[in-house]
Structure formats: structure tokens, C-alpha cells
Image 1 (cartoon, rainbow, N blue to C red):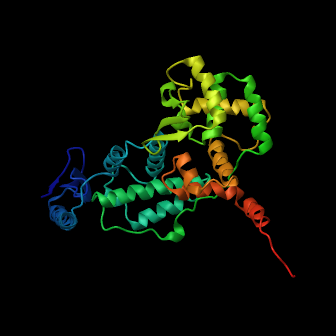
Image 2 (cartoon, rainbow, N blue to C red):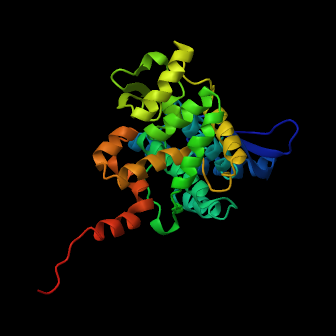
Image 3 (tube, helix red, strand yellow):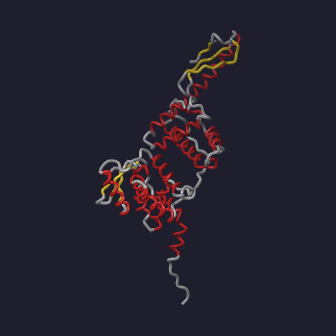
Length: 349
């Protein structure tokens, strides 16, 4: 039950009640002067508030809805996704920062309904950011909403009209030209074995920098030409064969180190910074190349050399071959034309 009272430093009747959305006490002014005559009006307001509270209590009880603020639910969301990689966690944190500009994190989760959700999506599409950044905000929002449904923070479930959903931008897949990759390999001769080895490893394995940054001498079997590695992305221990050219470079590095980590880099950012400096020094810094280009380049070369889709997916550590297929787009038309010209047509007698 709620109550009516007049604070010492105020001149109006106030009502106090337990918020059914959060389970926390709330106090609100009735806007009525604290007179005997207005007391009955204040009591009527309290009765109306209690009716709403009871309706919500019944709804929550029947729907098994948990009482929590948006902020509290998001903390649980983060906890349940704490095993995700650091980039994904960063995406979640950037989302909630933007989300909190519209939604008070101290508000109950039930403040998020279909109308407010649609309005938020429409608003973020107006932000002066790249389409893929906005799409990423939406992806995290959609995941958070599904979490709220599944864990009974909000009900009933609602769907967002596909027409207002942000669309990702399909960017052209950039790979190294044959001239540039040759230039890169030649320029590596003047670099230390640490940088040289990681670039050669990225070229000949197509693995993510995060897959190999912690690679140790003990994980490399030169005799069998196999690398054992742990992928933070897929959270799996995997093995891939080593190309003969890479085996030669790895052997040189292993002889130098004897044991321990192969690469002297603490973070992916350090590798990226070193590679950007290398590109600039060799006049290749304005071609859109970055560390991700190595992976796309590997898949493209595999496609051009008729390596099966399944084999390429396994070499890249892809769980789904549809991911591998995206990389093939860059050379598909060129290869289709080449394959077409291999066909022999007999025309006439």
C-alpha cells in the first residue's frame, strides 16, 4: 500500500509507493496544496496509482517478468557475454553509451517497447557515422532486446519492421595486387626477423593476427609442417599445415629464439602500427591495405588456384563456409571469364 505525506520543506501533498517495474520506493508530488480539503483528492490519486500498480503486478506475475532497471539488465547481459572477444565487448560498451543518451539506464526495462525501440532506430540512422557503424549499433541493440525477452525482463516480444532496420554497407573486398605483394616480400628482406616472420605467416596462412600473436616455438612442428594454435575468435584449438615458403622463414626464427613466443608483439594494435609504417615506407599506404587484407588475399588466391571451398574454410578456421564465400566475391567475375574461355565449342562441321 502507498501513503500520503507532506515533506517539511514542501507545501504540497506527496504520495509514496513501490514501483512495480523496479521494486524500489518512489515519491511523487500530487500538485495539490497540503490542505484538509485536498487530502481526499490526494487519496483518490493514490488509489488510481495503486490500481495501475496492481495491474502491472498481475501482468508481471502472469508473464514471469523480472523487475530490473535497464542498467541492471545490461550488466547481466555483459556478464553472460563476458567470454566474447575484447572487440565484441567494446561494441557492447559503445552501444550502451549511445543508448543511454535516449534511455535513462535507471528506468525500468519495460520502458523499452516497440514504439520507443522504433524511434531509437530511426534516430541512430541520422547519426553522422558510417553505415556499418550504425548497423553494428543496431545488431547489439537487437541482441540486447532478445536477451530482455528471453530472460523475462520485458514482454510480450515485438518485431521491428524490416523497412526501418539499418542496412550494412557492402564494401569492395580489397586484396593485394600481384605487383604489390611481390614488393612487400622483397621489402621484408631489410626488416628484422620478428616483423618479417609475422608478415610471411599472415601471407601463407591467412590466419587472423589474433590466431598467431601468441604462437610459440613449441606449437610449430617443422618436420611435419604443422602449426597448432588457439583461435580466440572461435574459441577452438586448431591445426593447419605450413606452406613450404613459410616453413623456411619459421625455421630461421626458431633457430634464433629456440623457445617461447615466436612474435615479439604484445597486442594486435602493435602489429597494425608496424605494418602501417611498413606500407608508408614502401609507398603502399594509400591502397586500403591493412592486416585484414592478408586473410582476404589468402582466400582469393585459394579460389584462383581452384582450392575447394571446404579446404579453404578449414585452412582459414571458418566454422561456416558461407563466411569463406564472401571472400571469393573479389575475383569471381575474373575467374568466371577465365573458366569460360577454357570451354571448347565445336561450331559447324
